[in-house]
Image (cartoon, rainbow, N blue to C red; front, side):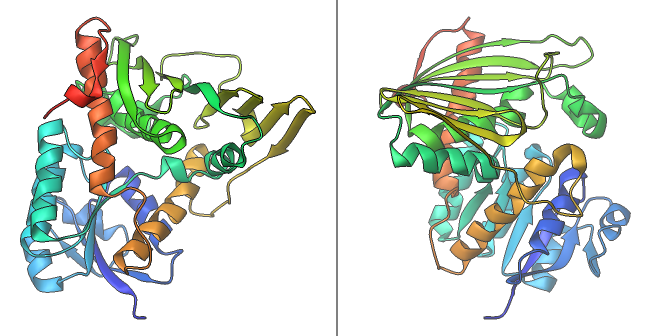
Length: 341
């Protein structure tokens, strides 16, 4: 099969790693880059660069586009592609609001255009291994879980736009971790959230605690913070504990996976692959881009379903915005069946 020709929209911090990850796969070829500042796009080393997205779509006629721009631009770029019948991969968060996310999904559905969200966190090696261990059933039926992503990592240093977001950690990494909760335990029925703004040089929240009541009966607590100076912090690792009727699973520091049952504790490491192009501070996250892209590429070829289609990720978006609603109401419980755009 010939490689699928795609255009990258965006040339910021994440775009260079997204492009590098695509280059690990033989079935995709980046033929053009759009950025509102073309000089910045030229630094990515792709021959064709555009400052006008419509001109790019008309002249290059790509097989798909990969949108790696600011979230406020996502709805317009998805609409442009859908109107021209071009499949879209879009970075998370899908949209700045739930109503716009629903509109994007409807537009692509009406145009019969594949629409996927690049949700890579669930593709991290240790998280995939924890899911496999959960599926083996050694700890019995899960009843409670904790997903923790807390550190003092200065994330705003390399992504300064985050300082100005009115909605910060829940959209930035909350969308990742709420998706992980769905990946591991299914859909949520209820949600409660409290947030904090600890740093005074930012506009949005930099700490949040979300409690989910899953339809499966599992209670999941998601703890998020860029304001926690801890003894055992290890950015960007996610720590997960799952309690079951027959034992527990724990994903701990340095990719340790521990299974505790009546027979004892069984531990192993689940490190990610290493890529020369990855930023050492983000290598766990950057490594997960490759299998995520591989899944979406296979879906574009019709070989398998995409794990994170727009339709699926809309459920994660509902959790994110329900969390803001709950926090705005002082932690009032939200029933997800009642969450609307």
